[in-house]
Image (tube, rainbow, N blue to C red; front, side):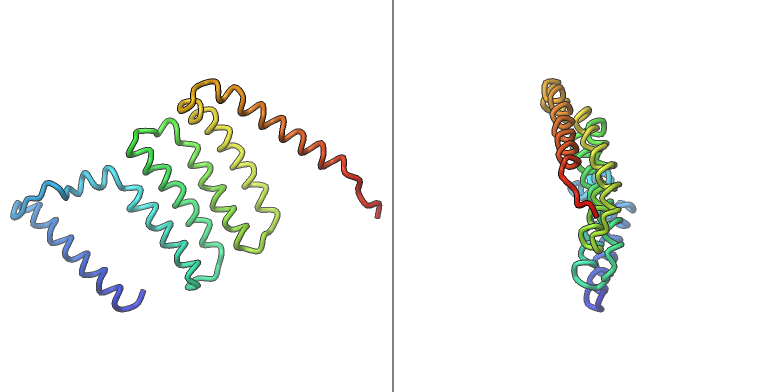
Length: 175
């Protein structure tokens, strides 16, 4: 962080701290800017989404060339979005598979930007598949009704089986 940005951030912290202190001492009263309300509704955006975005910007700006930073960045970002939507709309019971998806996204980002090591696709596929199955069981059924879930998993399994059959039926070189 350069000097101007750190000074600006410091000034923002001092002003916010002074306002909150004056509110705590009953010197000023402002009903619109209630820190308790803001933290109760937007804690995920503040403590998960913003650091996730910051880590992504650090990598993509070139300040850190290690793609390993993308794993926690992806996890924080997806977990933050999951928590933020759940906190605003009370969907904790429906969106919990987003936590499993968060790890898959972080590892997939490492795969995309870290040399494309095929071994990373195994946990990405397992975690992504588990997340999809759990989203189907808990979220899609809740949103679309039971009928959606009755057809989604069987069709997914049939397509997966066809892919496996055709992949193994191709002739291989006999070297």
